[in-house]
Amino acid sequence: MSARRLYFPSRVPVRLGSRRYDVLIGSGQVDRFLPEVRRLRCGTHPVVLSNPPILEKHGRSIVKALSRGGFPVRTLTVADTERSKSLETLGRLLQGLADLDGPGKRLFLVLVGGGVVGDVGGLVAGLYRRGIPYLQVPTTLLAQVDSSIGGKTAVDLPQGKNLAGLFYQPRLVFIELEFLRTLPARIFCSGLAEAAKCGVIRDPALFAFLEETSVLELRESQEKLGWLVSRAVQVKASVVEADERETLGIRTALNFGHTFGHALEAATHYAGTVTHGEAVAVGMRVAAEIARRLRMIGSSDADRIRRLLEHLGLPTTVHGVPLSRILQAMSHDKKWSAGRSWVLPTRIGRVAVVRGVAQRLVRAAVQTVLEE
Ligand SMILES: NC(=O)c1ccc[n+]([C@@H]2O[C@H](COP(=O)([O-])OP(=O)(O)OC[C@H]3O[C@@H](n4cnc5c(N)ncnc54)[C@H](O)[C@@H]3O)[C@@H](O)[C@H]2O)c1
Ligand SMILES: [Zn+2]
Image (cartoon, rainbow, N blue to C red; front, side):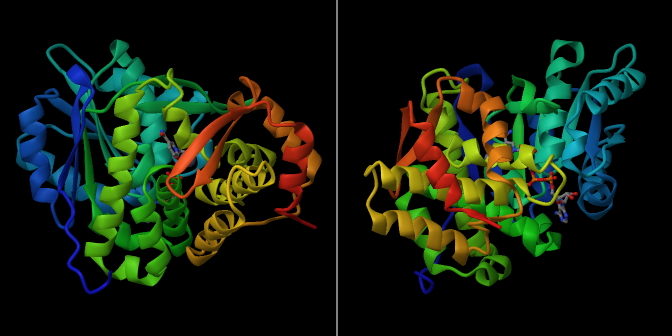
């Protein structure tokens, strides 16, 4: 595969009728941003929301592009941790927008950052004046392949992750691959977990590509990275198109690895000891283990999933978190309690949603990933 030139589309549509939008993918393409914003006629007054360091590293090029087009750009910032996905931050940002608003202004938001900025910023956009337009400019791999697409916005509550949110679609997702060059290795690998997830649920070719490509190659080759991002984006877009609001059970497939993953994040109190992608990686192994024990997937495919995660520099075990704490967190999770459904792989490229998995089986599978 490495000798072949890898073509990837620079524009992937998310076809949602009147809420349709495009995902632009490219390297060194910030020049494309302003014409797109003009074409979309989102408003008159852009507000760029970001984290202070990301605003300095990457947001400035977006601010400059908008200023060049004559837009009076203002900025708002949030701290760069999961704790920013809170009601407190949400309230502060809504008031921040109200302060910037005024007669004749049509505000729109430009979210420059990872999944945290995208999730809280999307919710702010959905709530302010019952909805203003927003654009996603994802700067982590996880946000580029997953969270910026599909319109799921949320903040966390003490009782659980993403409990307060809206489905509210962006008007554009602008993916600049160059922004990923500054990502620390660990955050880069976390994003690979969601890309691997796309491979398992829908795209065997993406899965095989990840098996054959090293993390170093992905970091060094914009062509390989672009191919990977575009495949994952296409998986995400097609799932969202088929089931925008997760009412038909199709979008549920994207929760593969997340039942355990969210519980692990909650059990560690979102303290940053485990990233979202790392939690999902261990969760994918747990789901594969449950599926193997139910004889829904062959041992060789279940092993391929575990080996791929290791190959991508992701954890497949957890240290120092007691089983009881994880099981308790799972009983609070909405995906677990709502009919106790699990997304289980049946082979590479296909998953099934299974209800009523026995507690005993879940406990045994979880135990295989816990280390003292
Ligand atoms: N809405 C969805 O559909 C969806 C899907 C998956 C995940 N999520 C959410 O996404 C969040 C995780 O997102 P994330 O992994 O992007 O985490 P994040 O937003 O916390 O970013 C991780 C870290 O990377 C830094 N960073 C961002 N861009 C950078 C860059 N280019 N260079 C250097 N550092 C950079 C950030 O400042 C932060 O410290 C979780 O809250 C998760 O629940 C949402
Ligand atoms: Zn996720």
